[in-house]
Every structure is written in structure tokens, then in C-alpha cells.
Length: 255
Image (cartoon, rainbow, N blue to C red):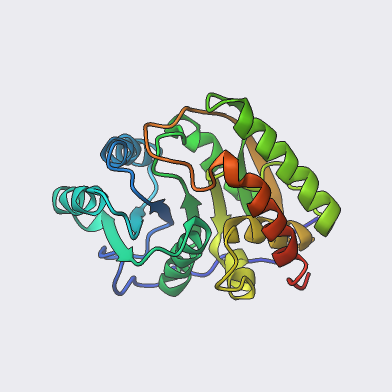
């Protein structure tokens, strides 16, 4: 099925990207208490993005970290220049921080958003494959075929997949994966339909995108690495509580 979505024409980027022309891609990286890993992640991803050859801006959004994360990000910004932007706000949770990044890209009319995490689990070796798939898709997910973060996280992902199928009638292969490339005009349709109190807002966005039959979905099998320290946004011990809350909030969305 042909997509009804058309990418916006390039326009001059006026503020956040700090480059002469609008970038093709905004990398959105939510960060919370990742002082052990964040510098390594940025330093690994920058050359990978340059190697693929797109014009990009990288936005790190500090979600109220209580360690040295923000200090490290500002140091990286001073060294990397205008292509690396740092935003900081009070703690809102991972999902809502993702949505803030999407809104930045929408406001700047940047055609594509790549969401990654700051814990080192997203391996940039798969970037070129994911970027290449954009030509025929509006959303491209890195589907975690191999995971080094333990059986509990694998189980949680399978439970989430089943929950979304039963609650929303949406088959999302990996709705909580942080490795996803999305066309900004697709995000713009849905971003304001996710309430500000929706904790797993990135999951809600995946469901909304899946339920719209105009939107073309692609996938690239990836290996998901072990964390470089820090804590997951949803600890396994709280997964049952968050799953119940997710079901309640999903039922309030209109599809």
C-alpha cells in the first residue's frame, strides 16, 4: 500500500540545528542518570552517523539526572559544536522525554527522527541498514533478535507485545525498542494525541503508528547489547504495575 505521507520540502533551519540548511535527520537521545555510559555512546555514534553521510543534528535530552550526566553532556557539546545539542528539564519519564524530542524535529521541519538510548545498548553498526530502509518506509524499527540484557527483559517484551495485541488489536513486533527511525510528518499526526501523563508514551506512539494503515512499517534485525551501567527506565520489578497502568491508559486513547 502506498503511503499517504509526503516528506516536507527542505527549508532553512532557524535555531536548534545550528547549521546552514535543515538536517535530514535529528537523533533524539533521552538521558537519565547515565554518567557511566553517555560519553561513550555519543563518541561511538557521531562517527557512525558521519560514515553514513547524512546531514544530522544530535539532541541529548537530560531528564532531570541527579548524577554528573548533565555536566558530561555540556562538555561534549563544547567539544562537538553545533551538531550536538543539549536540553535539560525536570524529570518527566523516558516516554515523555522521547515525545519532547519528536516535537523538536517537528518544529524544525527535520524530515527524519532517529531515537536511541543513552545506555550503550543501541549498536550503531545497524544504522546504515536502517537508514537505507527509509526510502520505502515511514517507520523503521530495529527489532531485537538477539539480546544481551537478560531473559527478564526478553520476557517483558513478549508480555508487552501480547498486551498490545489484546488491548488495542495492534501487532507491534517490538513496541518498546529504543532503536527506531521515523518520518517526522508521521509523528506530527499523533504526537499531541498522547496525554502528558502517559508514562510509556513511546509505546503509545508505536501503537498509534501501527493502527494507521497509511503508514509503512519496516524492520531490521538487530543485536541489543548489555547496558553500560545505570538503571532501565522500567525496572523488571515494577513491570507488572506499569503493564496494568499501560492497559488503563491505552483504553483512553482514540484509535
